[in-house]
Amino acid sequence: MHRLLVACCSAMLLAACAGTTVLNTLTPDRGYTVATNQPFDPENGLRLDIYTPDGAEGAPVVVFFYGGRWSEGSKDDYKFVGQALASRGFVAVLADYRLYPSVRFPAFVEDGAKAVAWARQRIDGFGGDPRKMFVMGHSAGAHIAAMLALNPTYLEAAGTSRDQLKGMVGLAGPYDFLPITAPDLRDLFGPPETFQKSQPIFFADGRNPPLLLVHGEDDEAVWVKNTRNLAKAVAQAGGAVETVIYPEMSHRFIVATLAAPLRGQSDVLDTIAEFIKRRAQDAPRSNEPEIQTTPILLP
Image (cartoon, rainbow, N blue to C red; front, side):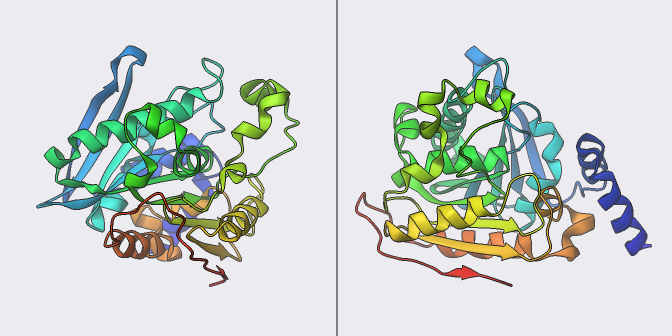
């Protein structure tokens, strides 16, 4: 029965919306509470959901951004991610952001910064510790998380600082995707003379919070070179980075394995949880470069 369930879930992932609906339906409702639709940017109608583990007090906080080519998706599609993080004792914040074509770069990164700033100010009321904050994302959401961790201007404009982040987790993120050739992406990130500003790799300055970059060799949507190239750039700059490359892992399956019915198919959640728990204990960071490099790890 379990194998049949896994096979069905995996097949449903071929249709993204249907896949997340199935995963959310099979997600347990016990062990946590959810504060839904908390407004963090009323002017733009942006809201977030907060998943708090039962009995949480001073827990690490993870602000998660979903993927969808910067043009589709909703926090409501990722209950399974909120539950997964809460199951490991973390307060999960799932935030919406404005989508193309209603907005263009860097509006969605600015939205992400506002969500982080809101959480820093209020998360202690939901069992989280604002001194133990992480950003995390999948695909386009990993791009947003990386921009917040690597380019300090976004969080500073929102009234906080990347020095207040304990770390960033990226799942199958686009970090180094020049040249941009797809017409919609050229419009989204244009004009061409500013394309470089959209690439996280160009902001590797050695002062980043620790990064955990996770990717699959079988990813045909976002090539694994994005993760390898960013890891190399950050390490060469003297920044903290850890990279896990799975020999067999597709673009959608890497986030889907966080869901309860698929959790036994990989150790992605274990890897994320170990990183967050370890880095949450780090001493407060200064703006001086952290001289630390970690080689690419192959499981």
